[in-house]
Structure formats: C-alpha cells, structure tokens
Length: 371
Image (cartoon, rainbow, N blue to C red):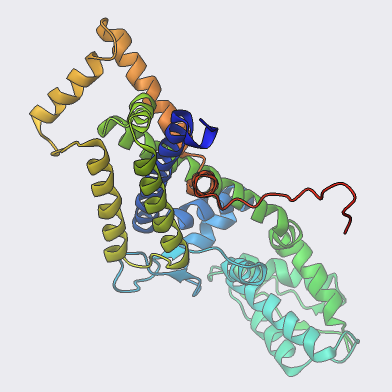
C-alpha cells in the first residue's frame, strides 16, 4: 500500500479540508463583522491617535470633507461619519484645516504667495497685503485674537513693520517690506506654528507601518475569537475533527477536498460585496459542516446544551478533566484556523493533486542522455 492510498493520507486530507471549510466560514463572518463595526476605520483612528495625539482627535471630530458615511448612516450629518485611511497629501491637508483660523489662513496665503513667486523674492501680492490689513484690525477679545497677535509678532521678526497700538483694542497696522521671499516665510511659519504637520509628513511611512500592524493584530484577534466561539458552540474541537476525518473513505475525503477548494476559488475570484452574498456563503458552509458532522443544532435549545455536555463528559471519566480537555482542543482548533484559509487551501490543493496524480514530477535523464 502506497502512502497516497493509506488511511493516514486520507485522514490528513479530510482534516485539512475541514480546517479549510472552517477558515472560509470564519473569514466570511469576520468580513460581515468588520463591515458592520467599521473595523478598519477604528484601527486607523487608533493608530492615528497614537501617532499624532490630540491633533488626531481634532481631525476625527471635525468635518473637513474627509469622512465617509458609516455602514448604517443613510444621511451624512456633520460631523458624524467614519475616517477611512488617508494618503500623505490628504492627511497633511486635513491637519492644516484643523489649525486655528488665522494660522490656517496665513498658511494658505503663504502657499499661494510661494506659488506665485516661483521661489524668487518679489514684491508682496495684493492678497498678502489684504491679509496683513485684516490681522491688524483684529480686536482684543475677538475669536482668534491671540493667534493673530502671535502671527503679527512673528512677522515683525521677518522684517515686517508693526505699529503696535497700546491704547487701542486692535492689534495695529502691519506693513510688509518691499520684497519678500514667500517660500522662506512659509518654511519658517510652518516650523513655528505647524510643527506637528511637518513631523507627520516626515514620519508618514512609519505611521503606515504602525497602522498595518494595528490592523493585522486587530484582524487576528477577531479571527481567533470567532474561531474559538464556533469551536465551542458547534463542538468543533480538534480531536473530533480528526476522528471524523479518520473515519472517511478516500473517495469521501477527495469529494470533501474538491468541494471546499472550489468554494474557496469561487470566493477568491468573485469578491463578496453584499450582505446577501455573505449570508448565502455562510449558509452553504454551515449546511456542509452540519451535514459532515450529522449535527442538528437549534439555538437556545436546552436539550442541545445537554447533548453538548454529554459529549464533553464522554471525553474523560473525570468531568473537570473532560471539560479542560474539550476547552484545550477547541483552543487548538481556533489557533489552527488563525493560520488562514489561503494556507489551508494550499495544503488541501497539494494533497488533492497528489491523490489525483497531477503533481509535476522532475524527470531525471537517463545516463548518457544529455540535453
């Protein structure tokens, strides 16, 4: 008897097929959960807060055209919504908009001025002169007064003339020099008033890595919890899965493997994009598993709970050891499922091709016959 026809190979093929089916089921349930809970948005917001601190909170609370509707948000109400991952330019623009009014306005005008000058010193534009007039007219007690006051003080150090009005309620007239270089002013202004934005720009690549790590860790935790819940509720402990696989004939194992591989390939090609499709896939796999194990599970059924407990007690004469063994085997099942459907699909496909004789064999040339 060759290995491919042995009970060991059949058992391994059947066991791997069961793991593939469970991994697909967990994957679909997780996709539904992530959609309902906006899981990616939450992971992004958490990573953004860890990266930028209070500035990230401002970005998430505000409404700057960056947010999308939640999964059950039919109307876009300010400032509600979810924040999806942003690229570098979107993040920088969003952070600039969270800055105080006069800071944001001065930064915007300096950008326009730098673009207008093309990195050469020129006479200030009418727009810049108008901004200086507005700054000089800001009154004490008005919203943003201290920001405007600090900006004017900074401009004074950049060769602008400030006629400070000690006895007046306004900041006072501000006049520019005959020639300014806006690009230098912009760099100095952002360094003083928007240092967190420059830091975000310089470390954006690291932030992306932080987000990817946070999201993967969140996904793995969700996968483990869903897999463990299914294992406990449906009695899918690793021992029972192995016993069921060991009782299969080679023909049954091949049919099971082929069914799950086709289902996985169909899912991989046809992306699940609606609740109806997700529910259909979940129902297909659930019915297959119930058929495979011959179990009819009715939710919230006391008799069902008793049946499960009887099964657990049958694992060992001592109830506490039986329970611990059952929990441990369910934990192992959950851990194996966490390896993911792609890995189990590769394993099942390889076994399936071996059994079908489709594995490519390396041809060893006979002695004296050279290519």
